[in-house]
Image 1 (tube, rainbow, N blue to C red):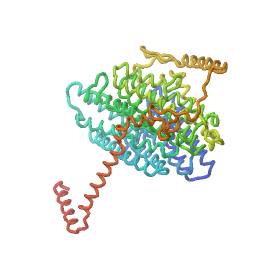
Image 2 (cartoon, rainbow, N blue to C red):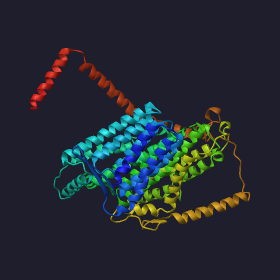
Image 3 (cartoon, rainbow, N blue to C red):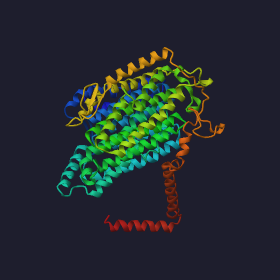
Image 4 (tube, rainbow, N blue to C red):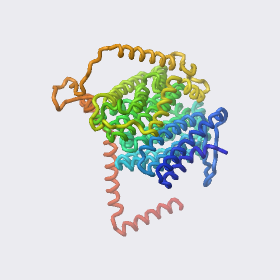
Length: 618
């Protein structure tokens, strides 16, 4: 029995059954079991990955549909399975009807199909299933946000379809191994000064089209404008999957671009400093994604929007690692894809819990929740440390590898962008920490309860993995090294050794525990503590007035917003809206001339078409 179809179809079948049965309790059980099946079989198939990739083929209408499980696809499929299961556990508490179960599990099946695809037919069909299902999840909550997501997704899908069409026209194949072999042959011919199957123009066009297609789904700047609204205007338990899994399909697309076209693109475009030009473009756009996403995250008053922009920002780290193009850079990008899925999936489950228990979304309505929601606060503490890149969490290990990959290639601009992203991450996380969990608690939150059991289990799975992959980073490095003939990361299960830098997760954990014990002793011995009233404000050099009253929970970064007012006016969201409006007006004008109600004009149209067909010999 081949398990790959089961991995792919079990969430799809489970979603359909949950939608049909519509019995509370049974519906949830079906959803959880069907999302756990892929994880079970992926773990079961792991020992078989030591040999050739596991394959499954099916001939449909003259096309051979193929699935394949290799080390890289197994890593991404595991991301989908783990985060998907955690998100589904969250849906047990937060899902409002059977439609959400249908489309949530359908999108999980689509993502798994993208990761397991071994040809462009399966890849594109899975991509569209995933897009449709996620669109329906957003549509249920906010039609405007879903329309924006739909339009950008359609643009990306058409770009991908056009690129696939060019490849098929030139190669006659849709199989990844065959296409990769042709591009490698082209690259070798280019090195020897000869021609090839693809011209330089065709190669650049395919690259640009895939850049758009995968950039949209990943949320890469400037194609990110759909993500903040889509992430925030849907079920937040599902957003854990949206951000943690679906965005990784875009990242995986860039991996696929490397696997298929690396040599051809490198020969065609050359290098920028020590990185391939095509990769440096991806990395530079990733750096801009870090900066734009981080700044806009800091300016949000809604916690959903904060983590939506934060998720966009963190994707930029992955793109920088990939763009560098070295084995260390690619390994670092893969590590951060794992850690981002874990800590960002955890954050959105935390947000889902907070909103589920309080019904509120803005900072001004929170405060003092650590006492009322200790389990959720403990999960938030893990997520905060991991996103901020503080040891011994997974986020530190992956960001450290990205820093080292950038430094080792002497790329100062990218290094500055990565450093800026880490700094701005601290800024908005400090606000989330103090505004939500500490300070005076509003009177209407006195009866707030902690996370329901399913949500707590979902958060616990992701939190534990954040700790394990930080304390024992060698567990991840061991799998990443299998992707390369010359492993870029040395060390033990506890230590990462790059030859020019080391990170020991266990040692840092021990020192952290010692430091916490010393701090606790000093605290209980009566260290001086100054009580700060909640009404304490700061004015950032402005006159002290009620109109300019800044607190941790209200207008905290208003001075930053004022300082950046000129740059904040430059909105790609507004630009795309204006372009779309101009296209709509142009189309309406063309329609008024073409469909003018004149029978004679229609007869002329028919005559012209017939003449064209005759000229073509049809």
